[in-house]
Amino acid sequence: MTAALAATGLSAGYGAAVVVRDVTLAVAPGTLVALVGSNGAGKSTLLGALAGLVAARGAVTLGGRPLDALAPYERVEQGVVLVPEGRQVFAGLTVEENLRIAAFAPRVRGHAARNLARVFERFPRLDERRDQAAGTLSGGEQQMLAIGRALMAEPSVLLLDEPTLSLAPITARAVFDIVADLRAQGLTILMAEQDVHRTLAMADHAYLMASGTIVDEGAGRALLDRADIKRAYLGL
Amino acid sequence: MTPRAGIAAGAALALAGAVPWLVGPYGLTIALNAAMWVALTVSWSILGGTAAYISLGHVAFYGLGAYVVVTSWQVLPLVVAVPLGGLVAGAFALTIGWPVLRVRGPYFVILTLGIAELVKYAVLNVEAALGASSRLLFGVPDNRTLYLATLGLAVLAIIVAALVRRSRLGAGLVAVREDEVTAETIGVPIGRYKVFAFALSAVIPGMVGGLMALRSAYFEPLQVFNPVISFTIVTMAVVGGAADARGPILGALLLVVVSELLWANAPQGYMIALGVLLIGFVVFAPGGITGALARPRP
Image (cartoon, rainbow over all chains, first blue to last red; front, side, top):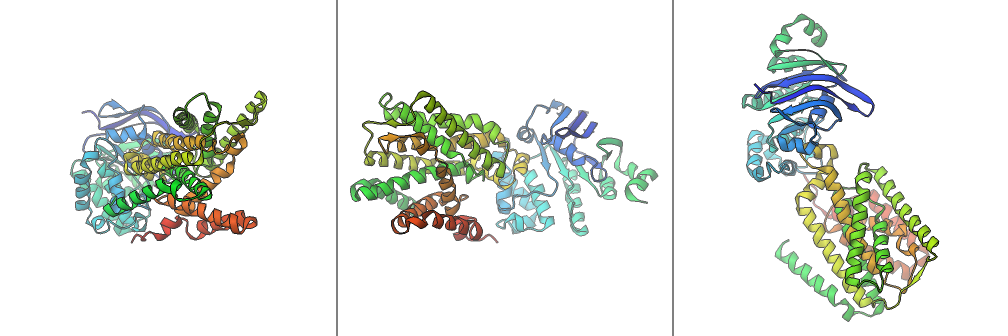
């Protein structure tokens, strides 16, 4: 089966600093694939490179079609949509303005009203706060908004960068539930996350990153059961 | 635009169009100043207000437009020379836009100021080498003609700025203002949009510069490359509220009136009072008049 998203020999970084080295990965259609690793492992840089935001060498394909030469906005048009680390909502705009502006790609412009209704249906909390400035939302609500904004662009592959970062445990659980729900509905997801236990428990496949390279991979549950993984990542 | 706002705008336009027949020469000079600053500030706001890229280099576009008109005076008809001045200014913005708009924040501010000074001294040196540091222009149009033409450009600037704000380009520029990297993640082609908006914001200032060069029969480059023109544009936009479509118009009109009052009543304190006004707005009302009047969001 052709991977929904694949990278081959991908290296990426900032100027002379190479942060991600020779990464090869594949995300099968309709699966949740996790990138786990400690701070500084290169997860965010890798997601940025896949989204076209970070300079990279190597091959990236979407459904077999090369993305390497495409700018970030062209990758969004192809369906590769990133929810950046730290949410990064447009703080000065209202919730509804944040969502409407996210239907930017020509491919989805005609579906803005329908997609907006779907996002509000999925996140009633956002509907209640549609006229509220996004910067005044709680962290969890901002994460919902960031995910909702990505859904406005009708992603074929959703890249989630640390979606539970700085969230209270109960809010983080809610975000994991949202991700699981999106996965259950058939959305292809590549998620970088530091909560190794919860992430591996729900991931169809996972890549372990350290020092900018992939050091191991396997089914999420299988990795979770390995003693060396438990020792290294869970302190058990 | 609501019907009431449409009627008000139409009445204001009709009144502005009738100004040459309603006021004396002094009043017409003030009206000409007002039309000029509205055209310049509203044009500047296409990028500066919508995307918050603060250009201190717009005097370069104004000066280039002036130069095109002055050097083609009595060679090309004015209806050709003025738009040509706008096109040259726009083409220059397009050319420098790609490298200049790679930086943002204070770096962009300083870079645009530097480029305007570079253009000024390049022109001065070329003029000095040609032995043409100043020029006499015979048969320049009267103030009534200049006013009506500048008023037309001010209206054009308002229409263009309003269309941009309502367009996909405007939405993309707002996203850039809010967060440039995130704008990329929702699919905004930020490089193309910023450069296009920069060029668009330069065209009308080029045309205005062409017209303003004809206010006097005596022309010298320092008049049209004076950095105070850029500072004044930014001040007017900040005072009015650059993020709102009405802000640059309000700011320009208010400062033209305040300037005249200060010149007439306190010429020694003119620049001091303007400086205090700017500081006051930046500290206490960073959103300008329109920002201060806007209903706060919940």
